[in-house]
Every structure is written in C-alpha cells, then in structure tokens.
Image (tube, rainbow, N blue to C red):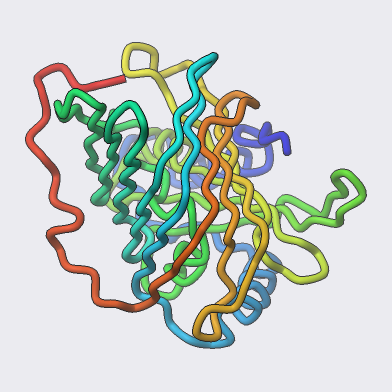
Length: 275
C-alpha cells in the first residue's frame, strides 16, 4: 500500500473548509468532515467485524518477532487497547522488555534499560488502536473530533480494496492549527472490498528532532477468526519504511474483560523525550 494522499484528497477538503471560515485565526467551530459514502463503508465494516456488538477493550497474547536491521529477537507480546485512544504494547524479548503506552495525546516508550521516554506529541495524534482498528470505526459514534473521507476503490495485487482516510479535528483550534493536526492524525484504512475487513492501515510517524520528516508505517492484518462473535486478526505485522519490524502471531484474545485504568498509566519520562 502507498499512503501518499495526505495533502491530496484530505487536505484539499480541509483547507477549503478552513478558508470558508475567513482569513482570521479564530477558532474553527465546524464539525469534522464525514463523507456519507465513507460512512456507508464504515457501517458495512462494523457489521462484518462485530455484528452489531460493542467492543470496549481487547487484549491480545501473541508470539512476537522484533527486527531492527540485522538484529532479530523473538519472544512474546501483550497488546491491549481500550477505545481508540488508549493502548499498551509490551514485548518480552530475548534482549529485554520493550513497552509503549498511549493515553490520548500522551505516551511513553521504554527500552530494555527500563528508562521511560516521552512519545513525541506529533506522534500521539494518530489513534492508539493500530492492532485492532475497529475501535476507531466505533468511535465515530461518540468522538465528535473524528472525521472520515472516502479516497476511492483500488486494486492491489489483484485484491479489490476500499480506501478510507480518518483524521481528527480538535475543537477550539484556529484553522491553520486544525489543518496541521488533521494531517498529523490522518490514518488510511484499506478494506477488503468483498469482506469489508481491514487488511492494512497506513500512517506516518516523525522523529523528535525533525517534525517535518515522515516515517511511513504500515500495519498488515490477516488470518481473521471469530472470537465471541467478533472477527479478530490473528496475524499482525508492522512495517517501517517498507521493512518488517514487528511480526505478531496471536495465540489468545480477550474481549471486554474490563481493562483497568492502571494499564494505561503514563510513567514519568526522562527529560528530553525519546526518538
């Protein structure tokens, strides 16, 4: 998948909306753009995944492979999401534990040395539920900042796909800041045109010392199986700049187990943040 429409379909609409508010920097009060065509596909996808049930939280237990250049480590992983803005990913690997926690527009990551570092604010606009993106689809019913547009229908490797793009429009923002944050929060969903299940999501991250530079991220989701009536991907792969970094093979899933707030507690980071 190639996610290169950030300043195309999405931002053309957003900039037009901002321009309609006038040239001043007053707060943007218009609701986020929700393309009716996109909302039709969202409804079909939610029906395919949940059958009308509500998923409040989900926990994956998995075997994990971590690849960084020539370094490859294996072990286990626990991935937890509650709603679309809270997640906890813990990898217990040969070289030690790696952890990332997201809570809204804040987050920390921890490496094998156990020291916590802040996740860059620019990297916290993207929804936290990347390993179970159905939670973002559900959030359209309760998060007034969340918008979605239909980019189009595509064919990749012989597979028909529906391409949607999600983004956030924070309230009480000036038009200029709103457009910036919408771009930072943009996530592309690729749905199988036959089953409507998500097969990939694409977004961008940014180095702390270079917020203009984009690092392309792609999540590939496959091997869907029914768990308590919910279709869940049992194979999750995460790519950075086209290279596989995380490979998860799910062994167990818990849905609506009542994940406590403590799972998403933000550890005090070291000064200066992290990469």
